[in-house]
Length: 265
Length: 265
Image (cartoon, rainbow over all chains, first blue to last red; front, top):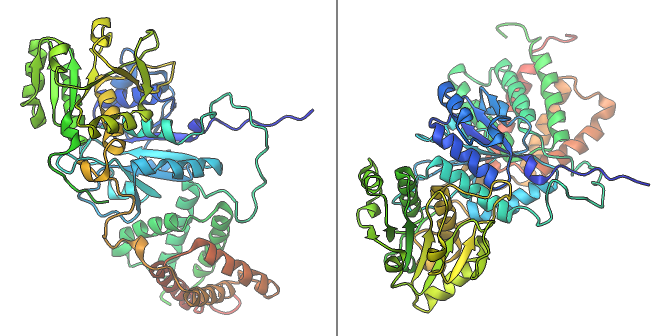
């Protein structure tokens, strides 16, 4: 008799993240769209406390608002995710990441989930969208194709449209919480090591940054710009978990040695 | 991402019809979704007068609310249409018409418009949806696939999801207000820097290796194995030419500093 461990339903490996939502009605609408399309994992970053309370206590608020995670920073909300997808209107921005139109997102999500990854779909505040800092945590940006004369969508509607697209096109028809899988997952080889999580990459970025400082590579006025570029670079390279640990090991060693360089040298 | 605006398009032969909407916010949200996805013909059937006034006069209300048609009965609103499509949750109904899931609607709409037809997409009131009488005017019903535990969608979100589906999948690419392009526009992004050549990668590998040695990271007996892994790692990461130069710059700086560490330290 053998038992096969059932993987989590793919849907449960998708986090919906709202960054600093302002309007309690929009928070409720986003949660309702999640419930409509069978998603249950909500994280809210730095919400305005009274509005967040109001949204959670609203009559008919979906259950998932109860179990929503609250974090102070986006980096914490996406720490476990291997693919962080930012949303927004890019009309007035020139992002450095790859941009995908929403109708073309499903295959990328399928691939990530098939490899055992975790996805975050990140929505910015109503007024100005995701900041440059938030965007630097995203591997990929997705844009809902809209009319250039009225490109900016309401938050609740944008969430509904994105989740409709994923729910109808990103999952195999038999994917559900009660799916029975006949084959065990393959053992990860070197190349197939799962992608590093956003938290792993943040740790690496921090250590590399320390090494930059210790090597006087980064004049302090340049620090913020370097940090931004470094984050984007690490996400562009998509190192797997094992690569990330090795690079981290090397930089820790370098850092340890650099700290032995006498002052003023 | 690039957008091409086309005047006089097939989408101008699609009427969005709201039957007795109750909530002015929902009317506004429906109108905003229409503007987002390039639809302009709105008809409102038997609206509650104060709410309809409120929605039309709201700050930032889309222009199309101004030119919306108001009728007393659904029959009047759809009189010119050759294909009337009703929307709603059918969980507790047994409709007599053909029911189509929203992801399968586009080909039917395409066929109708190609033959010169006019389409109406009809949304019922928030509380109970379309009545039996209203349904009898529909040729076809469309259902948004939702979770059976929370099937009923908010009106503004349902309109957004339906129009997103039509805008992205029901029109030939040269006949839509929006164009879905998967590649980012010709903005020269970081990402588009050409891939680093094998020679660039070899140079980088050599400098990283020197830094490893200078940091005593690599006991000499391990050098060959490390070199092999390092080469593979750099190729796995596929840094572009610009990334490669930056990493090289950092390691050269680190190396220069490491060489200043006093011997035996």
